[in-house]
Amino acid sequence: MAKPPTAAGKPLAPAKAKPRASTKAKPAKPKRQTSLLGPFIFTTILVLLAVTAMPICILLIAGMIPTITAYAVDQTERRMLTLTVGALNLAGVVPFCMQLWFSADPMQGLTQLITQPWVWMVMYMAAGIGWLLHFGMPVAVAIVLEQSLDVRKSKYVSIQKRLKEEWGDDVALVTVPEE
Image (cartoon, rainbow, N blue to C red; front, top):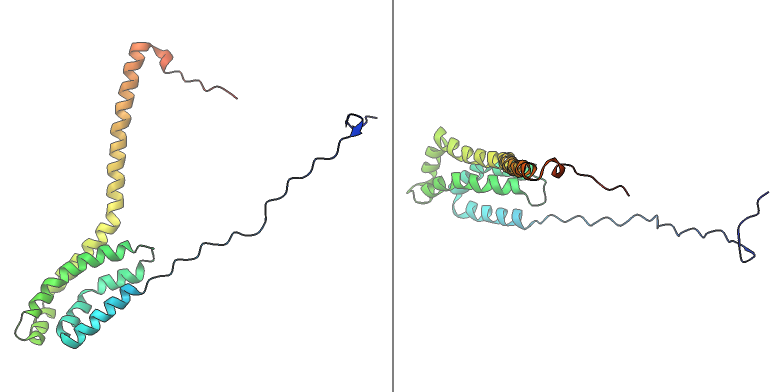
C-alpha cells in the first residue's frame, strides 16, 4: 500500500480550495428614465397654437400624425425613427402652415387645404420618405461596405499572386506552430 506523499517527513496538507466567487447577482444598471421634456415642449407649443392660431394647430396635428405614430412605435433610446420621420414630416407640413399664417381668413384657408388630396399627399409622402430613409439606410450602408471589402479583398489577392510569382509557393504555405 502506498503512503501519502510527505515533505520532510510531514504529510502534505490538502490544498486549500480557492474562495468561490460571490454568487450575489450584480446589480442591474439602472434603466435610463425617459425624458418628458420633448413631449412637454410639444404639448406646450400645441396649447399656445390652439389659443392663438387654431387653424394652424389643427393642420399641424393632422399633418404630423405619422410622426406621432413613429414616436409611439420607436422604443429605442435615441428615438432615431422619430427624429427622421419627424423632420421630414415637418418639412412637408410647414409650407401649408405658412399659407394659413399669411392668409386673410385662416379658417377658410384651412377648409380649402384639408379638402385637397394634394396637400395630404405632400405631408404624408414627406413622412414616408423619412420612414424609407430610416429603414433603407442600414441596407444601403451594408451594400456599400460589402463592395468596399470586395475591392480590398481583390487587391490583396492580386498582391498575394505577385508574391507567389516572385517568391514561389513557399510564401503561400502558412504554418501555425503548435503549443
